[in-house]
Amino acid sequence: MIVIRDDSKVDVSRAVVAIGKFDGVHYGHACLLSAARKQAAILAEDGKECAWGLVTFDAHPMEAVRPGSAPPLLTPLERKLELLSEFGPNFCLVLGVHSGILQWPAERFEHEILVERIPVAWIVAGEDFRYGKDRTGNLDTLRSNGSFGVTVVPTVLLEGHRISSYDIREALYRGDIERATMMLQRPYDVTGPVVKGRQLGRTLGFPTANLRVSDRTVLPGNGVYVVRSSWKDSNGDRHDYPGVANIGLRPTMNSLAEQPVLEVHIPGWSGDLYGADIKVAFIRRLRDEMKFDSLEELKSQIRRDIDAAQ
Image 1 (tube, rainbow, N blue to C red):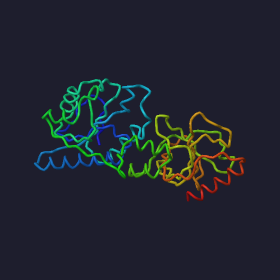
Image 2 (image 1 turned 45 degrees about the horizontal axis):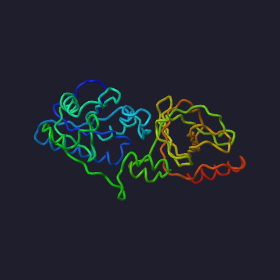
Image 3 (image 1 turned 60 degrees about the vertical axis):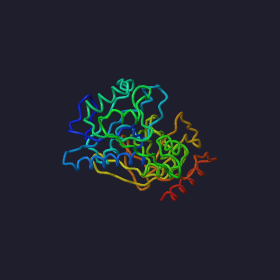
Image 4 (image 1 turned 180 degrees about the vertical axis):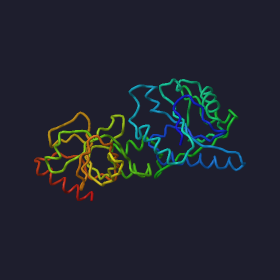
């Protein structure tokens, strides 16, 4: 997948495009991308080449529309691009939310993006798709343009409820990992560098890797989780281990932080992880964060957590 982030034109003769924020790259997005891929294959049956690709944004549009009101992201840009590339598109055009493009009238967006920068033959979008200043552009205005075909992908439901980035965030905040996994069709994950903490886990006999995760990235609700941790060492070798993660303020240690801390214990691993970028995938929630009356009680519970995770 070629990623285009500047004002360059997409170098194809014609294309099918799917447009969206794609935060989380969840199952609903997967259905949209599948429809775009299939439509490109249909158009290519006439013997003329037809690429397919995506149009998305480098951040949540609300960051430009109402600064400070944008929700945390399920997938920061680089992770989003990594997940999108797995669907096999030929290209991805990344638009900057602070470039002024969100203030363009719908007609200008159509002409400059969907005609001038990408020779669009067909557009695939969800039922609630909107574009242009004040969201005046919609599926009807796309159809009336007459320059390209339009496929509308119906809203994807899970147990009668719409799958959306908002619903996935809410499930994660509740610690409902199973539901989030179903909507994503994969375990939710975050990535961050290992930083030095107070080494409290080491004093208890359960060393942990403390991850620095951006406050603009969604963290599941406070509690203890079964996770899988993966990273590459300095030699480029990949490591993948099951483990136990705690998200919270560590009340038993009287070390209440202003923001929740993500720390991971990796049974069977020993070594220096400082500075390594670790991806932590959340498999299941074990329990709430708790305050214990003694360190011995805390250590006993950690042992039970490890046994339950294994």
